[in-house]
Image 1 (cartoon, rainbow, N blue to C red):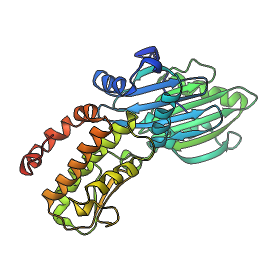
Image 2 (image 1 turned 180 degrees about the vertical axis):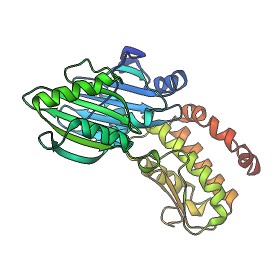
Image 3 (image 1 turned 90 degrees about the vertical axis):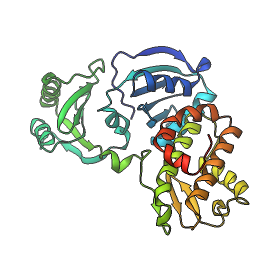
Image 4 (image 1 turned 135 degrees about the horizontal axis):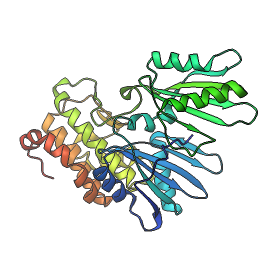
Length: 331
């Protein structure tokens, strides 16, 4: 299900034939901070949701029924853009609401298949408001009268979208009154879904590392995990990697294993997967940092992603300038 607030786009009428999608993303991260980039083609459609730091999530739907969400959708969209031409629209979304829109595809069902024959819609709306729902109520009206959605953030209605309207969000009382009225006239089946808090279903650049046996390295594992996350996001969004990122990274680690034994995947001491570092070795912190950053620098240049990554890494360099200086790192 692709849901994007259809307000006036910041820009439309673009075509991926002559676009560098990564540069477009970088530009609007700086220009509007957070939003959605919609891709439309006869064969498929999708959306990438972003904030000023990264791509948060995505949705992809193909005409043959294939559908992806989250990081898988991001990967599929990047592949599809290379294979076909897409029309592109960019929408600005409020930073306080971007998590909501980015995670609608991952919403968790709360109530499914409620009938207005037994459930009062007005009462259900009030109940969800009192429970401070972050999510949405979907109403499928009977008699072919259409469909409607009401969106909540912390119990407050932020808008609605209706098959009989133009899709623009409207947060006024009128939004709920229209749906209540039509549901009363025709009857409806209701579904309620919630969007979990950010920390429950979206990995971030500051997600805590998993440390198994080496607390002495805990102070560097966090920065290294952020470093790898930024690199992974850069090469995936930019289409610099074909296939699984973890596999590409492991191949580089194997090449570096002669100098940094702990990077050898077969040794089982260091691993990076699904945005998390696992380390069970006893390498000194400085050696650990140098081994990982050297590997990424080499891989970034081999993939021709280094110019893009060097821009993305600037906030990280500033944040961990002391560590960089202490270990004599060079970027």
